[in-house]
Image 1: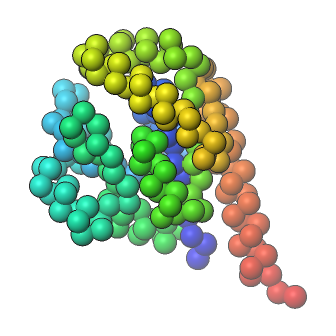
Image 2: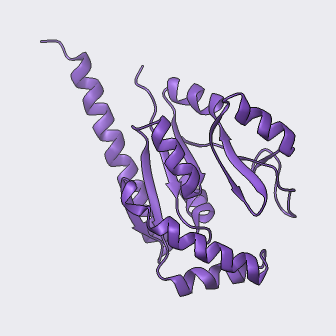
Amino acid sequence: MVKGILFVLSGPSGTGKGTVCKKLLEMEPELYLSVSMTTRECREGEIPGVTYNYVSKEAFKGMIDNGEMLEYAVYNGNYYGTPREAVDSLLNSGRDVLLEIEPQGALQVKKLFPEAVLIFLVPPSMKELKNRLVSRGRESSEEITERINAARWELAQADKYSVHIINDDLDMCTQQIMDYLDEKRSERRKIYELINEEV
């Protein structure tokens, strides 16, 4: 069986990763979105096991110590990350997996999975990025400043990704990503066919 592809959608906070992922999954039901784990509290409207898997800091740190995390990062004092076991299992069963994570975590994934396809979501401008963060109404002005400063570092890592997509228009952005996913899947099928071709 051909192994699944690990797609990583990443970019600064406020670039619309969650919105893009939701639309991608509507367009491609065969794509499996890995649910991240966090130590922060569940917010109103979020669904445990769907939005995030919520755990204590002690449990999260225990998984780090045991090598059970594919990647993790710390933001505003809370841990965010991806348990490795579920991702490995899905890929080995031939399923394509999508991770929606911050750049800090994406670069960790690249070290463990050099074959992963990293997609960097770019904001139209820093001004627009700030407007999106403010309009969410979730962070204080100090936290927004921290996220803007972090975004500058994150944007400087963009050359480490497979492709960059500007999220200026949601439909256009999503279609570009879908086209890229299809291209990578076609490449994988061709390689698999060559490996199994009789000569």
